[in-house]
Length: 290
Image 1: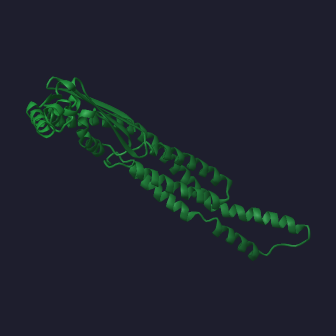
Image 2: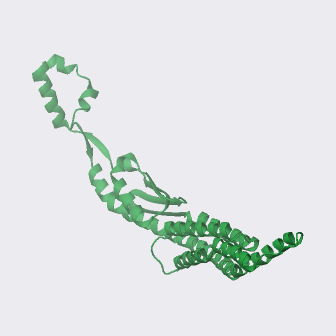
Image 3: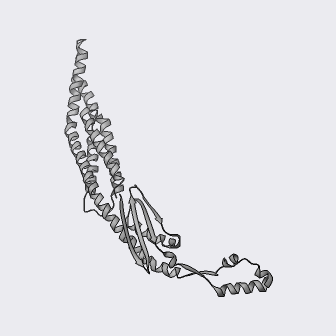
């Protein structure tokens, strides 16, 4: 599901902003865009988003304007002097004087941050708070989209329910229709040679067809899956249903395919086509549902 949320604040004269963008994805994927100086905040920000969102491709962006004014560096003269004294005592004054300045600045502890660590610690709780506020706004947009999506899913469920009832009403007449057609075909063929079919032989063939075309069990399972699907549409549910919805739709499709292959009736096949069309729409939307 899609959504966008942003929040910002001012911290020690620096503008800090967090944006959270979410687009459809059947899985959860979080991408963080954080300035290099503040990559230490990545675990906390990702944890905030992971707790709030279950599905979707999520991009979290942290912006800190004028951060360089709070993260500056200085040369530790005392440490540098100690290095110079050690070089002179080891190499001699003349050799030590030939050491490049850049190499000296790269020695451990010579260049130190001035206030960067302290600013980062003040930034940490502010960034987490902003991330939560941004997620709140994302959830508002996603919930609004979810309500619209739910109305379509309820409609698809109603279509399936009505088609299942039509098949249930049609199923008993399928065997009677087969028996009538079978008798008419056999009578027509045997009339040419002056013969007739024995009733028990006809009943045997009808019984075999009735057993092969029995879809009562599949209808019962399909109705059960449909009841579970309808329960997922309850607005009182608080847990994510996207993956469950996809699974239930797959199970309904399985039963619908079996009914179509077993029935051999044109009218039932037509009803199954409409059921499968609705299920395909459900599976498409289930990829977006959380």
